[in-house]
Image: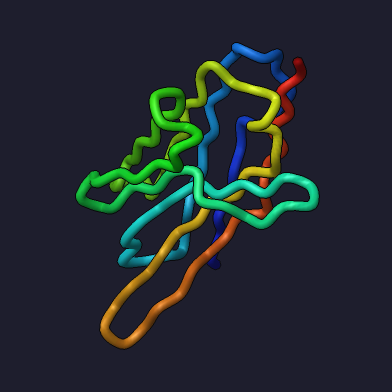
Length: 118
């Protein structure tokens, strides 16, 4: 059974920190794992991603504040969010990407709410 399960969201004051976790199960040959977010009335956007080799990519708006990490053995990805701002408020979604020669798919979690109060 394929599952992508996020945890760690919540309410925090501006300047605070949160750590999101995402565990993927039932999925093989995962290439990249990442975090996306969607604020009300806005499109879903990439926050950060990390490949199985450890290469990372960040949105400009979170560089220097967020850190993505990954445990390949557990198919788990983390997002450490520091110096949070009200504009970071959104539903955060975990993504697991499979890119094989004969099969491509993206698996998504159900999302976890992050709310930053001013």
